[in-house]
Image: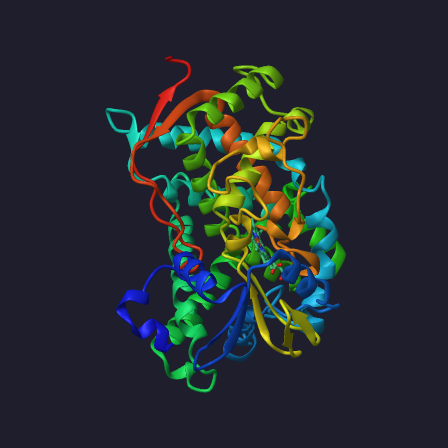
Length: 451
Ligand code: HEM
């Protein structure tokens, strides 16, 4: 904390870890008034940490959600869902694991996402200025992400891209909640209830749940009439948990809540990387022409063949991972980089430092999807899989990753198929304050049909 007191040290999180790592090496501990955190940036340490996760890995940063849901809003939230710990987390995760993590789970929605992308393009056309530039794409990308989760999880068109009140409020509230909880994390639990940021966080958590529950209840009622939930994750969860269980509502709420900033920002960075690397964008376009054609619709079979599309997503997530890293409470004693780490220590893998380390990737700053494509001269055999874990790893790995990836594939596929786009602003990086990133500006779109 004293370190941050000095003006010259008030730099963004990535610059901070870069600087401190150069000064002190691959492992260091930061003391704050509420907690001490050990940071690691070596893939072997990551491997050691996560291999000792045990049956109930603990994510200490979720503790604040669990506390709000169980203590402050126990009468609103029937369970803390996946944002909990111990056996509660395990029970919740077991119920959704299969339906959400099966490789084919998300592919069922490929047509829905394709239709949604038509709406996104309609919106994009309406916000392009006379030079066919758009100032801020992050907003519409958040809207797309929320609409996508609405279709896939609760079989409901939330009309977020069309400007629905629900969509506007949900996006504002989720964004605000992340900002508030970053502040509240640093406050000791005993005094937190008296702090305005915490109180607002509790109120927003309540609003989000009630808003989502309204949509989910309506979807269930509609299903009784027209069977519209068929194939959705919500129906699968209801069948698994029984009609009286409230867990499916909590889980669907979590998906609506967790799927906005994350996928929205990942999409923004993926488009930014393709816009600022026109040769890579062209290569992707050629793959699209070859596999699907200039007008065709993407199917599951096409997607299986589109290696450059997937590699582009993977490479963008390597350079700009949406989560700076993942964090655990050490489940047992261990040795990391030669230091004894006792059970109970908070350890954060600074993932972004590993995925951009030339120990693990050649020219780590370059956007080079080819490094992921077997058979390309630039293909790099992974030196350690732990060097790049944008969705985390192990039993607590991101439960929405298959859905997020499908959204990103569909978005980029449709945009590159129909447009050639470029970027002419300053270089953009992530400032890890919550999950928010900077605005994307000055993107210039030219329709392929016009070219
Ligand atoms: C590009 C988009 C996304 C990224 C980069 C991302 C990343 C992550 C990461 C790094 C974790 C922590 C993993 C760990 O600690 O090992 C996580 C957890 C989680 N994610 Fe995602 N996520 C994304 C999209 C989504 C979506 C769309 C959903 C909802 C459908 C979602 C729901 C969750 C949930 C519920 C957890 C907690 C899982 C648990 O603790 O059991 N995420 N995500």
